[in-house]
Length: 340
Length: 285
Image (cartoon, each protein chain N blue to C red):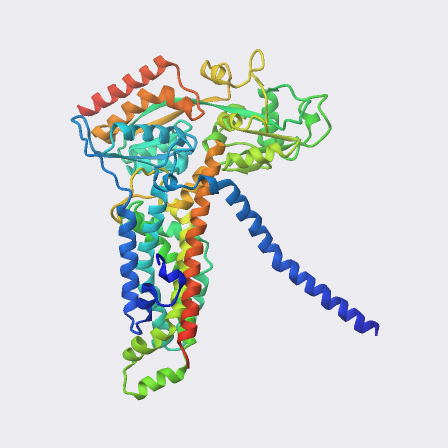
């Protein structure tokens, strides 16, 4: 019998427990101990093929869940190159990541928005110097329900009218946005106020980061927004372009008109900057002290090297090739000055 | 006569209402489990259990997540069982029944109801920062141990209460000291109840995410932890991460990981029920 304790009376586990003394407690702890070591020892594969340019060390990354898929992809490929460097990635959010970054707890912060002045101050108080590297672009998609047949595009002004704080309780019907649209109430969906996506959208549309009306359905999980919008004929929502691309059959993407013609977000229009103002750069921030460590240096070099392919692989939009070159030399300069 | 009829109608109405209430929870649960199984079962294979996290849903696995969960479970048990059982024994056997005792009692009961994220914040301040454990397995295990201590203490006390006085008195009558009575008579007699409580408490700890996110559990960990100071991820973290990804493949992965997590919880609850039955049969008084 493989699992005697599941079947019955005279199994080993039962016997241990049957001894009327309290020994079993010690045994139980032993079993748990042994168990955890057993668990931890299986699956450990260390490659013995250590060539000369293999280094070891660790790279601690935390930050935005928007940037996470890119960093995860790069960390995964990096393992094939440098199996002895342990790269870990957390998802505390851009702000949460900067808190750790400015305490010196982590080496790299994934950020879906630039660092705020407040965060800069707290970094300099701890004598943390850093470099900002742009690693990709993300488009914010404005979407509605596919059954919505009256809408062809939004202008930035219309989006502002819908989302600004003073619209709360005032602007509630389609007809108030543009004459000719139905006299029905719309409902709004968007990421939660803690996300970098929300910060960016409000900054680009309302004009002030973090300022919007409060009466909208907010979720940290963009899939929930997709669900909500796809089941609500009068929905308007926004989130990262990758979430639209995976759910094209459930949503209708709306072009946004800024100056000139309405533009649909796509690989080309985001990359060229044509889809403005709702395309944003996303960053990694590297700690100066950490950049001096060979493991971190190797990881960031690799990051900028493979980003063009991998960024697209996970649904984001890569920078033009020469931009990556620029970021690379900026990082190189940063490391050189750090050494002096 | 009409009064009688009326009462009969009320009676049977209440019966059907009761049946409805019983099945409401069960049916919702059944739908949920069926959905998860339909989505995730095909995804579970050996590779899924032994692969590292990956950006490709079909290649991604939960090795680091489930080993992290096993580590957390083991460490939490080691920390919380001695503390919880000893505290329960003290309160039930040694502690005097005075004002202080009732204040402690009320507070333990209250602690059992504190939201888990509060324990996370406490753990962040005490274990991660003050004691400088960092976002390690040890910090996570201490935090979860605090979280389940009240449950273990209460279960221990209830189990000890259920041991009849005659057993203790017989032991004292044979000349045993208080310590001998507790160690050789009372605790073994109560151990079915205590173990059940411990296992149910641990299976609660297995599913906790919020406190671990707060203390800094990671999402991507490409190595299996080798000592308690290593950083870690756990199954609920991995599930949470996958559910919020845009690609449908990750949702399937999440369903598969949920099945594994449910399996762990079911097995632990199964052990708890088995132990309870075992001791109920064995102890006669």
